[in-house]
Length: 117
Ligand SMILES: [Zn+2]
Image 1 (cartoon, protein in one colour):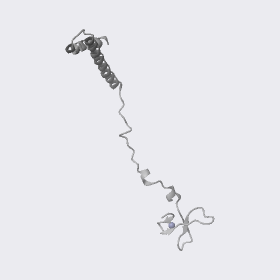
Image 2 (cartoon, helix red, strand yellow):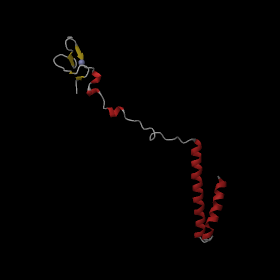
Image 3 (cartoon, rainbow, N blue to C red):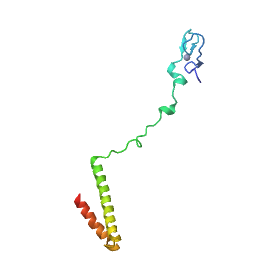
Image 4 (tube, rainbow, N blue to C red):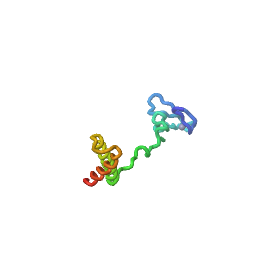
């Protein structure tokens, strides 16, 4: 269907010094020129034009200062608890406390660390 005039149902052709594809219009002596933008070579495939733009994957919610503060608080709390249990376990290992006292001591350490901050 390249270089085919749908209006006159006539194929356009190009030869000699012709600037572009065209065909003579019957009985009029005039020429019908092929519009350049309608050539198949210049027309991008439809699937590229209709490509949907996905926003759901590219847009991520921004973390506000409050979000960061909350995240920092949770992280710090987690570290506090971890450190507290470590200290209690160390006490247990050095036979200072009994294993069933670890959590009690850990809680005490945790409270101490929290107060220090
Ligand atoms: Zn035509």
